[in-house]
Image (tube, rainbow, N blue to C red; front, side, top):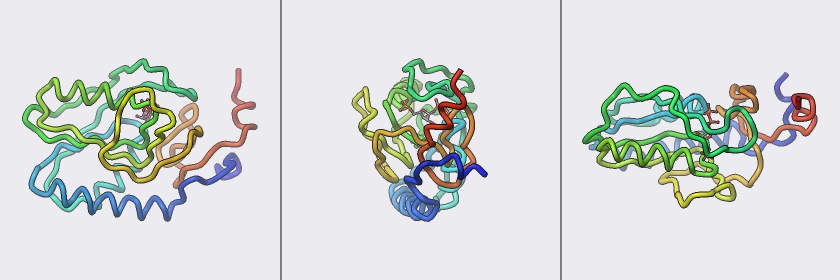
Length: 183
Ligand code: PRP
C-alpha cells in the first residue's frame, strides 16, 4: 500500500542489510574495549539502531535523545530543539551517535558540541545515509552506510509529515504525494 507513493527506491532492503552488517563489523573492531554509550536520535533512528545493535558484538549501553530540526517538512530549519534528553551521564564515556541521515549536519554538530561540553571522552557518528550536498556546516560522519544524492527521501525511519518511517527501504516520493498534502 505504501509502495504506491514511492517514485524510486534509492536504497533497497538488501542493500541496507549488507550496509548494517559492514558497519557492525567496523564498529565492533573499533569499540570492543571501549564500553561506549550508543545514542539514538529519535524518531528517525529506530529501524537503523534496532538493526545495527544486533551486529555489535561488544559491551555497550544505549540511550535516546529526541531532537527535532525538520518539524515534519522537507528542509532542515536549523532550529534544533531538545524534546527528550538523555537519562545516562556521558561524562568520561565514549559516545557513538546512531543516525538515519546526516543532511545539513546541524543536528549532529549541535549534539556533538553538547555531549563534549558535558564531558564525553569522544563523540563519533554512525549514519546509514549521508547527504553531503545538503551540508551547511563542516561535518564528516565517522561511519557511513552509503552516500545519497540531494533528494528528499523517506523510509527506514525517515518521514514526510511523520509518515513512511515504516517502509523497509529508502526511496523518493511521487510528486502527487506532496501535491495532495499541501495546504
Ligand atoms: C532528521 C534526521 C536527522 C536530522 C538530519 O531528524 O533523523 O536527525 O534530521 O538533518 P540535519 O543533518 O539537516 O540536521 P528530524 O529532526 O526530522 O526528526 P525525526 O528523526 O523525528 O524525523
